[in-house]
Every structure is written in C-alpha cells, then in structure tokens.
Picture (cartoon, rainbow, N blue to C red):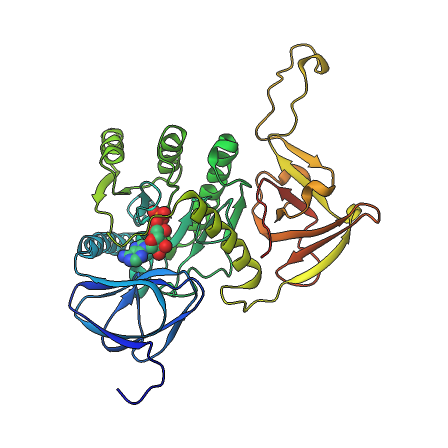
Amino acid sequence: MTGSASSSIRQVKLEMESELRIEVGHDSALRLRLLNGSAEIFGSELAPGIWLSFPSRLKFAVFTWYGATIEMDGSTETDYTADETPMVSYVNVHAVLDGRRSRAKASSSTDSDASQGPRVMVVGPTDSGKSTLSRMLLSWAAKQGWKPTFVDLDIGQGSITIPGSIAATPIELPIDPVEGVPLEIPLVYFYGHTTPSNNVDLYKALVNELAQVLENQFARNAESQAAGTVINTMGWIEGTGYELLLHAIDTFKANVVLVLGQEKLFSMLRSVAKNKPNVDVVKLQKSGGVVSRNAKVRQKARSYRIREYFYGLTNDLSPHSNIANFSDLFVYRIGGGPQAPRSALPIGADPVANPLRVTPVNIDSNLLHTVLAVSYAKEPDQILSSNVAGFIYITEIDIQRKVITYLAPSAGELPSKYLIVGTITWLET
Ligand code: ADP
C-alpha cells in the first residue's frame, strides 16, 4: 500500500463462492471497491476499481463466484466473510426461470399460456431474505436482457415506495447496490396501514386492482409477459396472513412459489398446490447473512423509508414545502371510521362499517404529521380503484387561518386534489 493516511482502508480477499457480509456503522458511511476478480451485491455486478459509497446502517453482502479482492474505507458495525451461502441454489432457480422465459419468448404470442414467462412468488417469515432473493432474481434476469416486473406486496418493509403501499415496476437494469429499486414510474396503490389486519378487504381489493392492471399490460406487451414477474410478499404467514398469501398466489396466477426458511409453510403450500398442477412450490434455504430486525428496528426502517422518499438516500433530493387552503384539498379515508349506532340507521341496515367505503375526512389537527397519498382519481368514487401519483407529508395545520403546510417531492400543483389518509405517520428527525 502507498502511504495512505487513513488507517481505516483495508483489503479483504474472498475465495470463490464466498461473501463479505457488512453492516455499515451507525453514524458513518462506508466506501468500497472491487480491486480484482469479480463480485456482485445481491445480483448486481461491481464495476472494477470504482468506489461505491454506502450510507450508515445498510446491511449487505459482496459475493464472488470466482474470487475477488475488495477494498474498504470507513467503519462498519460488523464485517466478516462467510463461505457457506445458499447462492448456488438461488442461481440454479434463476437458471430454471431463465429457461422458462426463453421458451415463453419462442412460443407464438397467440397462445397466451405458452407465452407467459415465470410468475415467481417469494414467501417466508419476516427476515428470511425475501426482498434480497427477489432482488437477486430480478438483477440476474435484467443482466441477461430481460425486463421482468417486480411486484412488492409487503406493506411493512416494501422496497419500491413508502410503507403502507403495494407497488409494481419494470426492472430494466440490474438493481443498483446502493440506490435500490428505481423509483421512476412505479404503479402504486395506497393501503394506508403497515399491517393487513387493519383492513383485510381493502388489502385484497388493492391486490386485485394491481394484478388486473398488470394483466392488461402483459396482454399488450409480449416482451414483459415472457420476462414474467417476481413478487415479494409480507412476512405475515399465520392465520389471515396465510390466507392473504393464497389469495395473492391465485390473483397473480403465480406458477413458481419459493419458500424461504420455513418447513411448515412449505408443506402447507405444497399440499395446496397438489390441486394446482401449474404451480411449483420450491423450498430454499435462508442465508445465514440475513439480519434479523426486531419490531423497533423495523419501525425505524419504515421511518427511514419515508425520509428517503422525500429527501433521497443521501439527502440528494430537495422536497418543497407548499401551502394550501383547507378548501383546496379533499381528504378521504377508506373503510374504518366511526360506526353508526344501530339506532341511527334505517331499519334493516347493517351496522357494520363497510371496509371499502370511501368517506370524506375533515381537515383538522389530527392530520398533523400524517403521510397522505395523492390519488389519480378524477372523482371520489374512483379513489378505491385508482393508483396514486405520490405522497405528501403534513407539517403544519393552521386551524384559524384554515391553511395547511405540506412537504411534497416537488413544487407546483399536486396532480390531483384527492388525497387518501390511513394510519401512516412520520416524525421528521
Ligand atoms: P425479508 O424481506 O425476508 O424481511 P430481507 O431480504 O429484507 O428479509 O433481509 C433482511 C436484512 O438482511 C436486509 O437488511 C438485507 O439487506 C440483509 N441481508 C440479506 N442477506 C444478507 C447477506 N447475505 N449478508 C448480509 N446481509 C444480508
């Protein structure tokens, strides 16, 4: 080494099929580059010699198939090498999926079944590596020129947009190891809560909407139909969560279900699939590198995710603070809401609140610090079936002057005056 002043620069030599697992320090960034050999981060290849900068707290692994030397600069919370990984089994799955994509592409597009590429659903408990495996499968496919669609149904820790949403986006290039999934033009539906139990019917309704829109897109686009989808799911796999998994498998017509790290879930899904000859259920090992996060850490991760939406991963975005009159904005809530007492209802009416009813919400101090979705709906009765353009964050409510101050990704008028509120809040730190 030349006389570098920084003692924190160090090199790590990786043997073939091993990985360097890193958790970046809690208060500092880490720089890293590939010195020689070849290596990838969750399926995305590193360019030789180029320094990459990773923000604090990021957890990731640099994996090499044939051997590599990595140089690091900065402090880490942990870093160690591991030579036992499930990567060979993961890449074998990729190879099978790739074969199916090629067969779909080669078949005549008039036969809609044969021209359908793999629809892969990744399932497992929280912290089993679902998002990471989804990302690898997408990046490996993109590297080979496919443009698969990524669907994220995880309302708790989704990787496409802010928590409380389900979303889909085409993946055209291997996913950036630092920036993650590109946020350009995702198709987003706002559920508004971070657990499905708040409104199971709404969750299902939005999954149906998203699947239907994608189905229409695939029918018009043979290339994306052949490339198929990779669908990441929630870690909620018991009771209602399990029922929702089955609903998603049917709704998205999944034909490959990858089960990570849970024997019981695997055997339950396999027996369900006995009646569905087109569905392959495959058990895969969880990586020892997956970091478990407790409820508090997950809550924090949600908060960082919202911050990232407005400010960017490295504070590279500048959101705008805007002011509007109460009368300019129309806020709606889906389902829930106060239930009318039976005595106030017409005789014979059902007192149970309709989970899919869209009701107007008064603008008052209760909206302070909430994150609202901006619907593409043209009329209130389209809110349930419309996707959303993005999100705003309420920073101030002046009841006296009837003005509301909010943060939006950009200046100018909102794409629509219809806003959806759920239970997503954020405290800017
Ligand atoms: P899930 O989607 O099942 O909740 P994730 O894929 O999000 O799990 O993984 C949990 C965390 O572990 C993430 O921060 C991810 O970056 C990290 N992680 C996954 N695989 C590895 C690995 N091999 N080495 C280091 N960190 C990893």
